Amino acid sequence: MTFKILFIEPPKDYWFLMGEYLPPPMGLLALAAFVERDLEDVEVDVIDCQAEELGWSALEKRIYSLSPDVVASSGFTCNAYGCARTAEIAKTVDPRIITIVGGQHFSFTSEESLSSFPEIDFVIRGEGERTLVELIRAVRNGGDLTLIRGLSFRAHKKIVHNPPRSLIENLDSLPYPAYHLVEKNLHRYHMKVMAGKDRFLILEGARGCWHRCSFCTQWRHWSGTWRTKTAKRIANEMVHLKDNFGAGFLWLADDNFELGLRGEELARALADKGFGDSTTWFFQSRMDDIVQHRDVVSQLHEVGNSWQLLGVENNSPEVLSEFNKDEGVEDAAKAVKVLKDHGILAQAMMVIGSRRDTTETIRGLRDFSIRLDADLTIFTVLTPFPGTNIHAIAKERGWIEDANYAHYDMTHAIMPTETLSRTQLQQELLDCYRAFYGSPMSIVRGLFSHNELKKRSYRHLAGKRVLHSLRQLV
Ligand code: B12
Ligand code: SF4
Image (cartoon, rainbow, N blue to C red):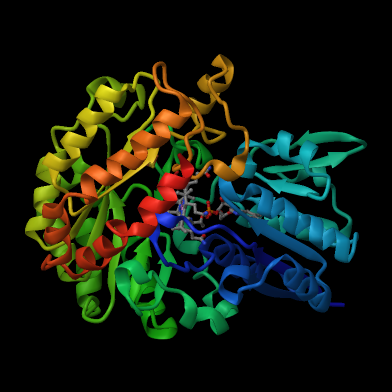
């Protein structure tokens, strides 16, 4: 009999700072493609509750009607309860359904998650593809679970954590994400706030990072290494998403782009394919990289790169060193200028809420942001995601005052600082947005900007809804 694997993107809250958007469930599509390719006699399906507008009871009915053998889902820390609830619903439909979760949050909380959520059968830690395939083979054929690296599970009322799995060496060997499994939803994926009606799809070009920022889960999740697909493969994948799935706006979702290592080659590969006329794309970058490789920035712009997100984080050298950021702010102004000179939307990411933050230091960051004059600035609150160094320190020292993971979205204040309560910090966050987006001058410059992306996103960020949501958090 065919074995049915159902990947579920559970209902989630939207990140209100990003406005209206609907992203495809890229991580699950990567896994689904691998399973389809490497397992025989399996039927693979994906339910995207956001795109299909399914609530919990509708999801239950869908699981019932599809009658899967396995339900697999994924979520960040702020969506962890949604994944657990998905598993719970699957077990309600049929207790024989095998429930599997994975991703950054569950990888770092496997012990805690398996003890708190009896409805979750298996946690797959770290890179998911090969562990998932081995697990499914083992449950079908009665294989020995203790031999599957990267797996955590319950056995004889104990929680067992098998040793970690080594990483896939050649990322080019991965199949293209299984966008064909969400074909009926494709017309719904969008990032209205930036790209209007253009179809918004996501792809990954690399995994991991070799920096070691103390607030970030990424580097540890990928064992401190950085692996990339070749420029040729990334370019082919971008063209594939454009030609076969109608991508108009693409996120190359790597955390660390490494302009110097592959930017030029990627620009050349995309130029050879005439990419960039009808599809634009964006990525996250480091300031030092931009400053050192401004010529590459220009080449990438010519093949459609329209927006870069810069991890500036803070203006204080002490805070940056506490974040182990491994980069100063001296490059910030230069990097913003390089991007703006090319007509690329420069978005600065800032973090408030480090232990030493006071009203004065946050005011200093606000003033710095205004002087820096990036096209957009997103302020977030330092969040102790499980798996980060900050989380380990905060837990040990008792700083974490809010243990509700649903709030770990970088806008809720989870910890106080030495001098500011959580409520005061929340107010400071609101004041950051007011200061950056609220002055008549900045509104006029935003709404009448020559940069179409800036104009659109400014309407959202300077609008009442964002401030209202931030005020509600206070
Ligand atoms: C795209 C993206 C988004 C999209 C979501 C798209 C989607 N539907 O998936 C949007 C824009 C909505 C988003 C929002 C947010 N995001 Co985000 N996002 C990313 C990003 C850049 C790429 C994710 C991705 O597709 N990666 C590629 C896939 C292949 O990797 P993967 O998901 O890790 O999956 C692999 C393994 O982890 C594992 N795995 C994962 N899931 C599962 C499930 C099973 C069953 C199995 C077996 C294995 C498995 O196998 C996969 C293949 O090996 C990541 C950073 C990154 N580069 O990963 C951040 C990241 C996931 N986001 C993060 C955060 C914090 C957020 C926000 C809270 C705030 C913010 N600043 O963006 C909001 C939350 C909004 C919400 N309420 O959901 C953090 C998560 C930290 C954490 N521990 O929670 C990350 C890691 C960024 C970072 N550097 O810190 N994000
Ligand atoms: S924040 Fe960015 S640069 Fe720092 S470790 Fe994470 S992915 Fe790397």
